[in-house]
Length: 329
Image (tube, rainbow, N blue to C red; front, side, top):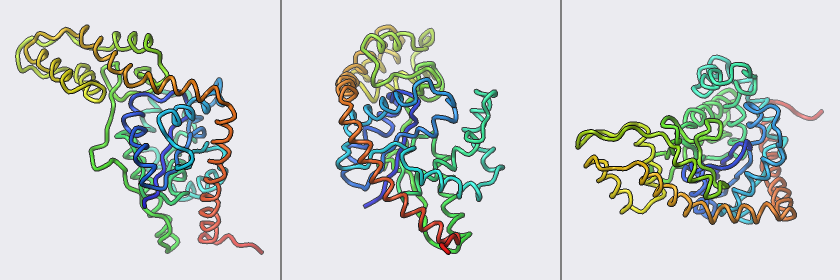
C-alpha cells in the first residue's frame, strides 16, 4: 500500500482544475492507499501575507474537500498549521537547499514577475515547504498537476540529498500519482494558462449556476474558423478541453464537427458548456453549504486529522533529529 500526500492552498475555493486534476481521483485513492490530505494554509501566506479571512478560507476549502467525497474516517484530513512538526522539518531541509536552485524554479520566476512588491523568503523556499509536507509522512506517491511537476522533482532531490548527506536510506523519493495517465491540466477561461484563483479565470465548485453561466459566456474565443480543417486557436482549444471532461461525448463530437465545417456558433457552445459544468458542480455546491453549516462536524474532522497527522509527523522529525545528530544529554 502506497502512502499518498496531497494539499491545496487555503486561498479560496476549489476550482474545476483542482477537481478534475486531483480531487476527483481522491475518492478511489483513499481506499487503495494510506492518504494524507491537508489544507496548505502556510503556503497561502507566500502570496497572501495578510489574508482577509484566513480561518474562513480554511473552513471553505476543508468543506469542499469533504463535499467532493473525501472520507475523514478513511483518510487523514488536516490543516497544515495544526502540525508544527512540518515547520521543524522545513527548517532542517532549508539548511540543505541552495539559493541558486530555488531561484531557478519556474514558479518563483513567475511570482517575481506577477508580484514584484512581495518577493518574500517564503516564496523562494516554497518548494522546500512542499517537500517537508510530503516527506514528513514518508510519502511515495503525490497527485500533482503539470504546474507542480518541477516542485515534485525538487522534493525528490531534497529527499535524495538528505539520504546521501547522512548516509542513510530514510526518505523515499516520491513519484507522481497520475493513475497511469498523463497529468491533467485544466485550462482557464481567459485563453491562456491553467485555471486558478489568482489568475481570475476559474470556475469554482461553490459557484452558483448564475455565476457559472456568466463566467463561461465571457470566456475568450476568436472570430471563428474560416476554412475547413483549420486548427483552433488556443482559447478555443481550451474550451474544448474543458468540454471533454464535463460533457457527453456526443456533445463534444457535435461541436467538433461544427468547428470543422466552419458552422460553429461559440455562443451556443458556451451555453452548452455552462449547463454541463453546472450539472457536475451543483450537487457538490449543495453539499458544501450543508457541511459549512455543521460547525461541530468540521471541528471534529480537524481535531481527529491533526491527531493522526501529528503522530506520523512527530515520528519522522524525531528520527530525522537522531540521524542529523541531535541527542538528549
